[in-house]
Structure formats: structure tokens, C-alpha cells
Length: 302
Image (tube, rainbow, N blue to C red; front, side, top):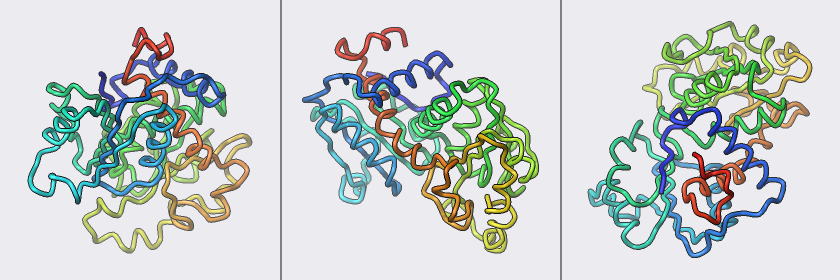
């Protein structure tokens, strides 16, 4: 079994191979037969899209699905995440999908585990399957990732999606520009910081981010109150976008904050298209994790 902790461990060829497989699945291609296997979903933070997208993917592959509620598990008694995963492994679970508030929770986990762990988001760290979904959406729109300009705008410092996307887009040959409040910038992100209007004007993809209030320390009420005017994609600011440019957002969306309500389902918005791609991308990831002979031969080399 294999783990997916950070997408940055993958090569561009690995990524394109996964995206090719997801496209084949979306087109109705035959799936791997994972019937009789068990998947456990452990979400220590709230989730709608990621959790249910994984569950749909697991069931489409024929897997039995266990949804572990941390509040009702032995974690509340002091059991470590490692021991919880070892318990699941011992009773027959083959893959665990884990979202956790601690950045890098997976460090050292893989060494003693026989089941596969797929990171569904770790604090402000990484969100590999969401990044794969975003890369899938961009490649499907433009036919390539190379030389596509992506503006990532918003609460950069607290966003695991922003970090994963920025790192992988650069690795895949895209051009990344960044924008948002100076208080929420991260100097470690690849890409050039520009003013919000310039980011919107130059981008092929305007990739907006939710304000991660649950990760803030408070004292930023005034900034949040004025955010839409200062840094949001307003209806007026959207007119700066060049022809053919698209709007993306990993969601959940705060309408009227990071994006105007009228733009969420605009003709050039791909927000719900990202969600639609989710199960197919995650099916491809689950097949990759198993690496069985029943899985497409394209996985044999990665």
C-alpha cells in the first residue's frame, strides 16, 4: 500500500498520469474492482466536499465505507492517531482518509502502517487531492498547465490549498501570482506578489480563497469587514478579467466576501465543475493507493 501525504513528492509525469486516469474515469472508463475492501474516513475537522467526495469515490469502486467520528472514538480517551490507524488496519481496513488540524500530522506515521493513508488536509499544510482537482480543472479548460497564469488570492498564510497549489503549479510549469492582505502573506510561497487588480487583470485563472477564520488569532475584524471591497472578486473587478479567463475556488464559498454572489455561478466560473471532478480524481487516487493488477496498467511505473 502507498501513502499520499504531500503532492510535492510527485513528479510532473506522475501528476499527468493521475489526471489522465481521472479523465478516463469521468468519461465512463472501467474502474478497478475494489469490492470487498474497506475504507475508513477520519475527519477531525468539518468537511462537506472532501468527505462526501471521497465517500462517493469509495462506493463507486465497490468499497465498504466506515465513517469514523472522532468524538465517538477512543481518540477521546487518549488513543494516538497511530494506534487508531493500527486498530483499523488490524480489523481489515485497507485505506484511511484523514483530515487533521495539526500540520504534518502524518510525519512518521507511514513507517509502521500496512494500510494506506491519504491526507485529506493537515492544518495549514497540504491538501493534495484538492490540488489534483484544481490541476485537473485547469488542464481540462486550457489543455495544458504549462505557461498558464494562475492568480491565487486571499488568505494565503492559513490556506493549505494555496500552499499545495502554488508549489505544484510552479512544478508543472504554470506561472503563479499572489495577492491578498499583507498580514496574510507567506514569504515561503513560490510566486510574485502583486496588487489585487493586477492579479485579476493578468490571470488565466483567478483562484480565490476562503478566509480561514478558524485559524486566526483574532484582532482582524476590521480587515475582514472590508475584505470584499479591498481584496474580493467584486462584480466591478471581474470586468478586469481577460477574455477566456476562469474563476476557481476550493469552497466552501463565502458569498459577498471573497467573491460577489452573482459571480459564483457565472458562465466563466468553474467552482461547481471543481466539485464535480472531485469523485473521479479521488477514485484515481484510491486506485493508485492499491496498485493492484486489476488497476489500469498505467500505474505500474509510479
